Length: 258
Image (cartoon, rainbow, N blue to C red; front, side, top):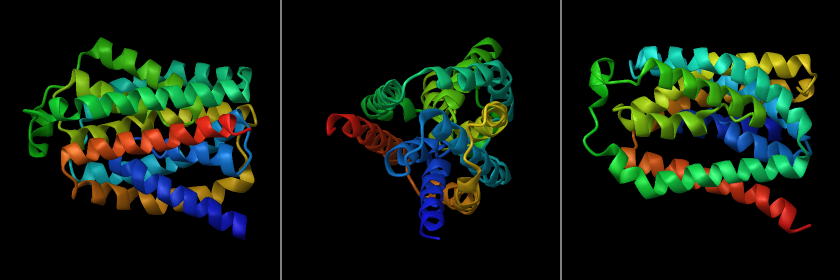
């Protein structure tokens, strides 16, 4: 019961923050499963994707009802993510645990640093949330290429791919930050199930941990979507960066303190 409660609490916290910033929650769950629950990389990635799918489903419903999703961009990213998801699920079984942790930490630090350095410039002059449907998205080719990278990262690390989608949309579209979180969540929902299916086929998912994680994810998704409306765009981006640094730091310390 204690283990189930801990997994539920981890899923709840990850899904609240994941929905709030559009990262899917996996960037919290994967380090937690590696550090505190003893999961191997492939198993952590596969099990985390169950939460990512549940979190993205519940959060995306809330975002779609709020009309904050740029649907065309989300669909294009998902199209490109299909082959990337299959490759990522295969690749994670061929890297060592230490390599997995260091690569994930490097990715999170790079994205977090970029968000802190450029958060004010990125939101300057962006359209209001009410004008999302009329806002410029991105080219078809760019969105599909981005989707491939998202699918690869999502399945490889089990983080859902939001750490790539969010900064990419900030750079290459005119969507406001709150719409970017929503569109990222929607794209993750469409992309992650493919990687999850591949992980299930490889027996990477620890079934005994799925129920409490998913329960927390389903409860936390709508909460995070509502909380995001209360935050200013610059603060939202700063919170993304802080969360990424915290997750990366935990992975690095694991190997430095041995």
